[in-house]
Image 1 (cartoon, helix red, strand yellow):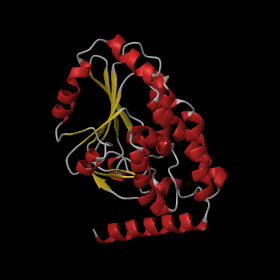
Image 2: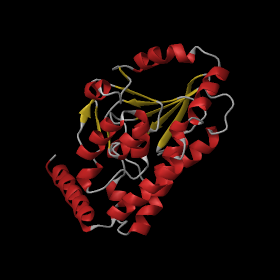
Image 3: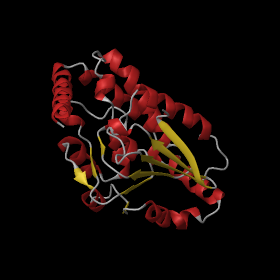
Length: 257
């Protein structure tokens, strides 16, 4: 089964669908590789006008797959996952054309980081999203914190990161993290229509102006530092025990479902 589905829904409009619905589209090694390969195909495209990222099966992305990455117990081992995925997030954030995260289901932890990589976030009503890393005794590990501080006011970013609070899409819209709310795919395309009606060149020029502004200066280095900082916490006993407890809770829930 392909873990990342790719489709061109309109000329120049690409859709990537995370396709691990039984794991709420959590990122594992295969999905990291799929992202890397897909990015190679479009990073230098001269015909792509927009990329939309969404999830299959009623979830956007549950972040990192804790079962897949639980075997990583040292800082060095954690970095083998965190740094490549931070690079994926950076490459999405710096694509030469507009990007949209369509939050058609929960986006938590690393899933919220993936959403933050995109220029716009559009969510279904009542969708849950949040940076829950602190609850696992971690910081953001894929560079999403560095990006979040560029997407919303600094004080709001601090609140979102430090509290670990889960927001619904309406709350996230009020604080400026979610740009638009719609329950239908056609509603998303309708909201994007004024942009998609423009020719290729203006879209690319505007995106380039943003990427070369002070806002993005030093972003790659900041994101890599963030990944390394997360790796330091990853090997701490508090995190390892929190993950074990989380996995055991999920196992118990499945036993009685």
